[in-house]
Length: 323
Image (tube, rainbow, N blue to C red):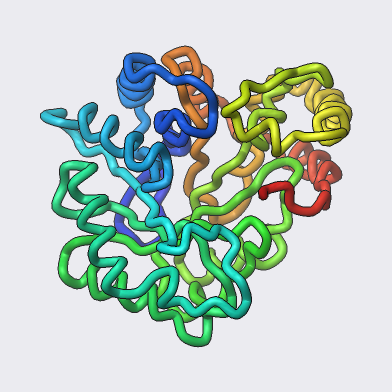
């Protein structure tokens, strides 16, 4: 495993982190607690030292599983969690006031819940789970989190970028209000290279990449006939002709990767890691086999520059598919 600095936080993170959304068992189909604990055990054994979770993942279930796993364990494993907006609206309206979603009183109360769920007295990284540039001129939630950081409740403050407008976090980074951001970046969604990543690098903001596999499509395991369970959000994400169109484009990527020495899923994880300023990727991990496969990517050499440049052609401005 290789490790990189997370901006100016003083935290060194493994290039491959542990995405724990599925551990909440509310959006990705059935998931047993025993599989979750075994996956965590294997990932940490293989060098993973940071785990990503959120209040919204199973109403805190993912956090509590991580707490049980870490209880009494020697060696530091960093945990990032995310505070959901009080409104439960993940695409804030341009007219929504920040104190409706993230008042200081609410943030203080919710951070205490996150601390209890994780069994700690300080959150390593606390992300707001959404944002809107409408709050940039009056970034009250970030100022409130800065107070909590000063009080020792939080070590690093961040935002998980809104899918519909990732550049909304650029101004807070420039203002020095963010220690880290969590960004969508993959072989299809490459727009962050234009402004967000250079801004983060200049500001010394750590960047953690999510959705590197495009919700699984870039592993190459889907076909046009793939069926997702009823309680799996991918039924909506890939609804209609989206799955067919995606599979066709994935096959074009597979052709470019062929003969390079990298399998498609390996290239999908290494591509974000080849971008300047990126600290880590956090693929979802549900079992020990996935932990093995994902962490092994960190042992590979970086993608050669000619291949990185060749893969840029697969940027796909398809709009935003999230509900």
